[in-house]
Length: 116
Image (cartoon, rainbow, N blue to C red):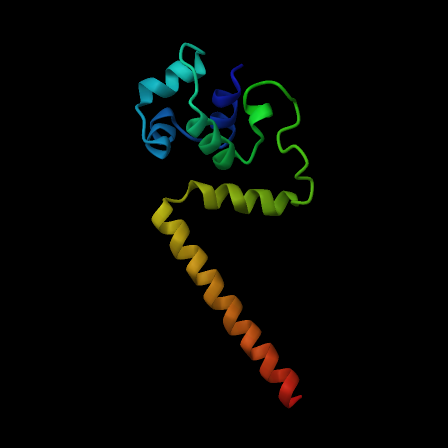
């Protein structure tokens, strides 16, 4: 099975969703999956980022999906896959919220150290 199709199904994405993510048509996704069309460099980069795999894995050169990225736990990989399903606007919102929460916690921790 084509790796793009395999990964798309694994993550529960439709061809339509993947097309929207890549800003291409559903028909183009179908052609990629049927290997009737060549992937562009930008498309390869986007797919690797979305699926958290190496280009070698995506292109069938390697059977190791995440290359040297063995440091993520299963929980972290699951969280990352949910995050990548969000729209770019929602991803930016989540990043902003996480940064704000981290700064707030760091500030409280620093205060506690000074007064404690």
